[in-house]
Each structure stands twice: as structure tokens, then as C-alpha cells.
Image (spheres, rainbow, N blue to C red):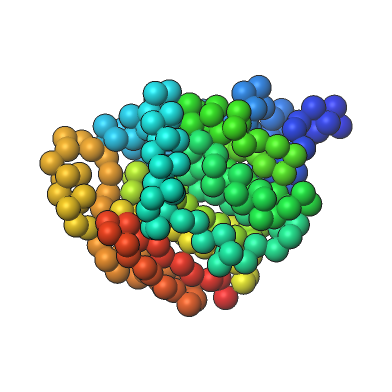
Length: 247
């Protein structure tokens, strides 16, 4: 990468490049985010082709999702972010997996402070476009990448969070393994997903809905299988937070 390319990048994305497994020689940031999903061919992870994902990935769906999240955070305790529990160090690196419209990534940016870096990862370009417009800044950047194959090097993130996204990922176990891989020792992760209940019945009636509803202990068991410590889960209504720490 030449000095010219480096200086043309937004500050947050320039810093993010240093954390990548395979940084591109000619980074594409023409849309305000770093596009890392070129022609992957057979190496590409499976994609969600279900109806629910198609809605959220559309331009209209991204706006609806943004407004739904804002409303839920105001009225539902299950959607309150565990930023304090994540214990993100000032100047650290925080990762938002499935960052959507970028509001959670922006919260991580405030937590890491001006010397830190908050990275949002999403596969939906309409979501990323909204995120860049609403939240990108000197310490907040977004990557067009797949959660099942995170582009970050091992042990690069001090904390990670994912809010109501894992149910839309074809291989959530792979995404969780990737999150555990990129966490530094001592790093914390918090995941929020829908759980079984009435909402599960709704999803089961949808043709090719493409959304998974997790059993009560399913994510906690996966966390422990990945070697995460201090695993705790809390269910509020039809949503569950699961937390853990990398030893």
C-alpha cells in the first residue's frame, strides 16, 4: 500500500487496515466504508437468502430497522446495551458484528474515546450506507465483510458486541468462533438474540424466513465450547443476552 493510498483513507479505516489479515493493496472506500467482499468464489461463506434478511438488506428495510431499534431501546430493557460491562479500555478496539445502521458502533466509539477504534462489520450495503452517513468518524469505521469470516487478525479486539443479528447468519457457530478468535485475552463479548417462544412460532410459519430462533441454553453452550469463561445469559421476554470473557 502506497503512502498516497494510506493518506486518502478516512482515519478510522486507515487504522483498521493495520488490523486486517490480508489488507488490500488498493482499498475500495468509495462508498465511505472499506469494501472487503470482492469476488470470493468458492471461498465465500454461505449467504442468507431468506425473506427476513432480504427485507433488512433493502434500502427501505434498513430505514425500518433503524427506527425499530431506536424504539426498542427506549421501551425494552432487553435492548439496553451492556457497554459498561464490556469494560472497553480507553484507546482500545471494539467490534460491532452486524452493525446495521451504525448506532451501536457509535456507542462503542464513545466508549473507546478519540484514541480508540470502533469497527462495524456488516454484509448489507444499504445498512452500511446509512451507518456511514450517521456514525462514521475519526474513530468509527465500517467494513463490508462477512461475520462468518471476519477479516481481522487474531486477538485484535478488546471487546465485541452483536445485537439481534446472529439469528440471520447461516452459520452462527462460525460467526461466534470468529468473534472468539479476534478477541484479545481478557476481552469480553455480548450477544443479543431472539429466543424460543411465541416469536419462534411466527418465524416457523414464514416460508423461507431465514431467521433462526435459539433455544434457551444454545448460545451459552457454544460460548463454553469455544473456551469462553464466566458465561452468563439473561432472558427478557423473547430476547436473550449472552456474555462471556476470553481467558
